[in-house]
Image (cartoon, rainbow, N blue to C red):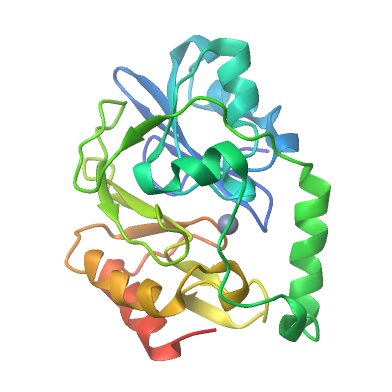
Length: 243
Ligand SMILES: [Zn+2]
């Protein structure tokens, strides 16, 4: 079965709960996040669909350094020497896994969705910390295939970013925006739950960083592709507020 292709040269991989992506350009392929550790074998499947090989993989760029995004990044770095890029403010999280959270999990456990997510995380395996990272700052244009521009939008984590691939017409938002409520099951674009955020207040403020970006397709760390443009996703998340 072919993997979903939300835009030309862009593949969506992972599970229904945890997304990661491949972006192909003339000079190679870049991974946007690295899913869960057990998603590693999907890389070759995706590359084959794109008509590429492992030799074409130039980099992993992380929307942020949470466990369900750094996934197999360290493994790939060890196997192939593929560099792993992360925002400076998530460097510590990448190396140590030490995360700031504004709230606990307990209030969410009455929702079946929360247990589904916990199950998906457990099934994905335990990721290794990334022992060596390349860091970038906001507004940087990364020297990787597709030349994405970095939009620093802290709140979920301190180093959370979105990547704008202008030529591909897509904005990868990681967990700056979720496609649905992973802890509540509520539909629609929204910020992450308090239990996963360093600051929900800051996460809502940071949405202004995404406004005005011209990309029809918004690709989340969690949830189905959004095809109604960036501003509509931001508006939906603001209307919902903290979750
Ligand atoms: Zn996530």
